[in-house]
Image 1 (cartoon, rainbow over the protein chains, first blue to last red):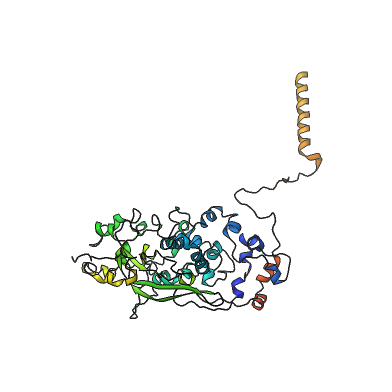
Image 2 (cartoon, one colour):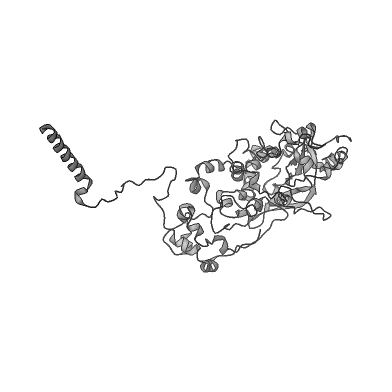
Length: 369
Length: 83
């Protein structure tokens, strides 16, 4: 994200915003603060930079704000779900402290997308406080979802040997923005309660088959067989190497400033057993991405805060945003069948994580054709 | 004949009364206004306790003042690695 000077972040610009419906409401109605004073400090007493949806926005946008509070963008429910699975209720207090210090800054309120650049990405008004019905992708969506999604989607990743990886075909040449697949209902949490539990809970919010119906795919080439289309996620054949992250540790410095450290990310492509196999996601094989969790990720806040670490795989169901028509693994039958390099086998998993990943590790490579 | 004359006289009288009421005593007709403001229930309007934001707007549209007053945050990134 480009650096924006402090004054520009709060500059209302010309009359466009003030002449708009939102501009006619008045600053204090949404932001609070103190009227009738010319002293800057006094004027800002009681002011909030980021009004909460239930107050400022709900007055008019009743339906949207009603669901937004339950959306993953606001609740971060997915983090809590996996922490609960790896920990115990008795350890919730120190874990909550860690979450409060390191994770909750990623909340996305209404204004963090529709008015400003998200605070975690530097903040500052998007366009002189003019409300953007569809937030600009580069300064909102991928400003937060940057290291993995943005780099994959826009073709900014390189392999260890320097080979550049191509952009997702939906971005180039497709020219599609995030909103073209991830619609308003998904982003605002206006979906089923199950979908609001975590990113991949319940029926997929977005499916490739929404645009590419199975009936059109079936038999369209030699590899689009009924078996492949039933038992493989689309990414198994159409994704390429993506970023995997390791060993995130959170802590605070002497002044109490929270920070994290992670090991350098690695580019890999691995197929494993689908850890989320269900009626909603019936495929047997899926692409797996290593997430940066470590048994001692929260060690600064207490000893052994993730005693049930092995309850959840560290190689997770993934939908890399780097889709290609032609990929190394779909070049021929033998590119995948009999090729252990593309599968998550035991030798590719750290010894201390074997137990956590036993349900997703491939022990028998699909045979050569 | 007498009966017809009587009916015509009564009709003329009624017409005169009707025209008289329409001309409002000979003054020019004016457009009537309703005393009750009409607002659409679908478009709520914030008017009840709007605070005076003129000072906020005056400052936040004055680039020169903002440049002089805004304080650049101290960027101290302790994080190591990709987030």
